[in-house]
Length: 348
Ligand code: FPP
Ligand code: FPP
Ligand code: MG
Ligand code: MG
Image (cartoon, rainbow, N blue to C red; front, side, top):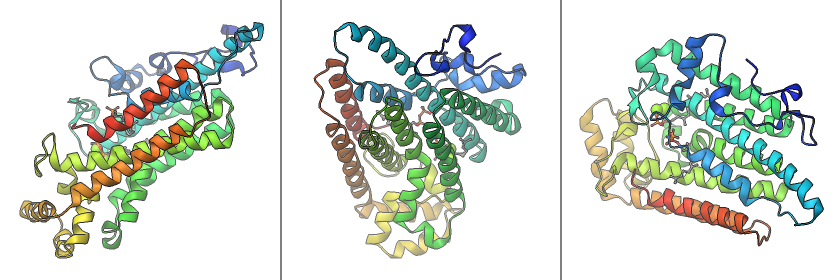
């Protein structure tokens, strides 16, 4: 099975390279070993698939940075080029989703998880070994798709993002006492784990469109701040769940000894909490003590404020994009702004 059609398969050698033809995600993950493919496919099946936030954002970004076409004869040529560009940007969305799912497959092994997206996780069904291999397989397919795009800058961006995922995950599992209480360390880790993939793929979408550094940086800034806000709210919800009251969340972070922004702010307010954190959370009573301090503190509030600062910056990045009066462009920009609001107000 070929990953992407070559020129003989109808790809042609267009201005934008040979591999502009778009192949659906599902057909990109075939393997000579059916077991591997069927395992890797798991999270792409209807009913099992994730929320697909990142590809949605990327396709909107593609429209938001679109160059408007004139209605002239040249317009027709340009519109063919625009279609090709669109399918290359769609490839970025798919590559991003493959990297994301690969990282989740590995993550569930590391976390010994039993559910993912509300269904049984792959490691539970197929075991750790096959889950790791399926993640590797997806990652390798993402690499092949990236190479086929033939843009070294984009390939390098996306490869760096994989490094960031691994770095962030490693930072999380091996922290010193000093690092564990550092907001700076937490934010760096958060960028690597949650924000790097969406920010760099947003940038890749702009680069493929042939934009200047200025516009690609705005796309990057949008993704970076959206991703950071998303994780900050995630960390709040881990304590609060769907209700506003503390202790209703899954509390999975704190129980695993992972200290996030709300607790870091609480530690600033109540230095006594440092000692509690140092004792670790193997003892559930310690979780309760930490939660009591968190309740008394402004930790949750301050975390939400920080998330808001980031979504404000994300909105600013969109507003700074070059002027356009194209309806499609404006609608997409509006949607990207609306998404920042949903990130802040979501309750799950
Ligand atoms: C999906 O993860 C999201 C991220 C890893 C961070 C990036 C955030 C966004 C693109 C914005 C999200 C938008 C809204 C409206 C909340 P996940 O593991 O929770 O999702 P999955 O179900 O796709 O795996
Ligand atoms: C989810 O975090 C995990 C990540 C966003 C990244 C995990 C990265 C790796 C395991 C490195 C390997 C990377 C690749 C590309 C193979 P979480 O456990 O805090 O959240 P969740 O399980 O509740 O979604
Ligand atoms: Mg996990
Ligand atoms: Mg994890």
